[in-house]
Length: 368
Ligand code: NAD
Ligand code: MG
Image (cartoon, rainbow, N blue to C red; front, side):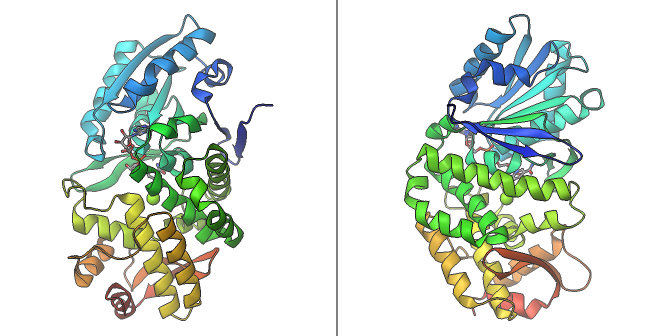
């Protein structure tokens, strides 16, 4: 029996998320996702040397007449630009891509967002097949159809909703992922438990060591369950008019931390996105307790789990509470009267709360 798991995304856009080891070698599975004669593999300079030849060979084994080209960007968030997006479109033009062509996103969220946006725009929309190779991309960015590039003015400011035709997550690729990136992905996995399911938090507590050790069975289970939570929310609210915003638990604080330390060039000490979200979730839990919404003991439980997973849980030194608050006001989710946060009523039950007074937020940022 194949150890592959399938999570179905329903609603307006229907597609399968396949999760399991060695899926990049599965010719039937990969070729099934392609309709036409052209495929453009988009990848980055870390991932392409490891996996692009493999994907190409797997596809050609099933479809020898396929025209395949590869477009490789340098790794890093600073490459998620309109300039790279234009180059991806040029690569599709060079390939002679028709309306039934597919873009194959092979990499982390940077590649997935860029490739997805190129697919959304080429001839007003062609298929994108997501082959996520980071834990974050497997549990978050490859699912749900958000695509985007960054502008100098801010992250993800230009983009489109463009659901993938299929998501194929080969868990074996996680073996080459740097450990810090794995932990960052685990922060987003914890987020699903915090928002939706107290029992899943318990499962994570019991499997923390296996997950950190890269155990295939534990990772597959964590990915499948995370995708299930995201798939359910996204199928009910594909365009984020309502409950999809719950997925931003920890992100208002997290984005403020990321912005304050500078998105680019802050060096290795700067928190990455998953780490900033880990801190942000603890702050959201503390704010919930300060507002009398949730028991403080639940904050301690969340903090302990994140610490076990090697994630930070306090604001990095040197970031000023007032400056972080100012960043949160600029966040695109801010409103005219007080700030809007995703908080929780208890572990496993998040809710959106508007009109949170600045003073309470500052109390939390000051650690009071
Ligand atoms: P990333 O794509 O930059 O990948 C992280 C690093 O790991 C890169 O250096 C990459 O080259 C390397 N890498 C990837 N896979 C590897 C592998 N298997 N082996 C070795 N190295 C590997 O970062 P990410 O964390 O995957 O994604 C972050 C991006 O995702 C951000 O741009 C964010 O905005 C976006 N995002 C989008 C959504 C969405 O819904 N569309 C959701 C969350 C995040
Ligand atoms: Mg996130």
